[in-house]
Amino acid sequence: MTKKVSIPIRAKSAPKAPKKSYDCAKCPGYCCSYQLIEINKRDIARLARHFELEYSVAEERFTKYDASQKARVLRHRKDTVFKTICMFFDQKERRCTVYESRPGVCRDYPLAKRCGYYDFLEFERDQQDDPDYIALT
Ligand code: SF4
Ligand code: SF4
Image 1 (tube, helix red, strand yellow):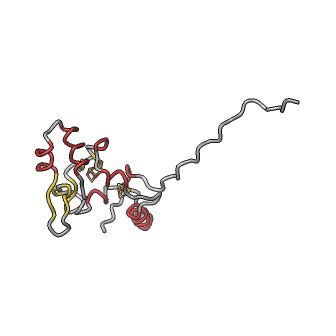
Image 2: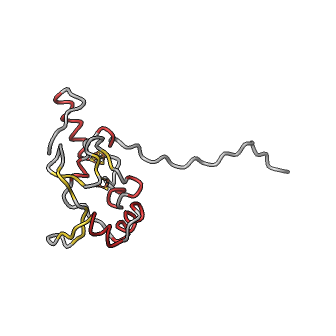
Image 3: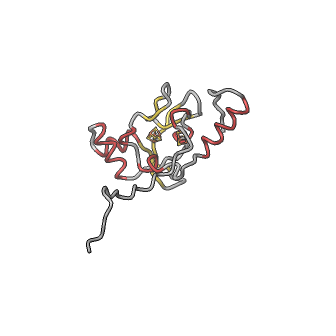
């Protein structure tokens, strides 16, 4: 006897990615103001391609060696909100200008579905009853 199979047979849906509980579009960019944003050779090569530059030019222009951390990091410049911020940060729009080519560490951050900075920001905005309030750490 043939076994009856109900049609259609649906594939099990893939588990949903955990929902993010932060919104970078509403954040002034705390993570991009972190002093030591470490960058590796692959990141530099990606940025070099993005700007159609030689690797060595991109390395010199966009990064510097931090002796205390023994690591190469993204260059910063003065910011209107924080003391300094990553040189690729658009200070008016408060967003990354090289998003598609951003370094691995920027892609991975905050490594969780919550962002501690954003929790802090939301808490302060709540306290101040001001949705645009920018709390400084
Ligand atoms: S600090 Fe958090 S919420 Fe703000 S831009 Fe970075 S990842 Fe997004
Ligand atoms: S490369 Fe983009 S995401 Fe990374 S720190 Fe700079 S502005 Fe932020």
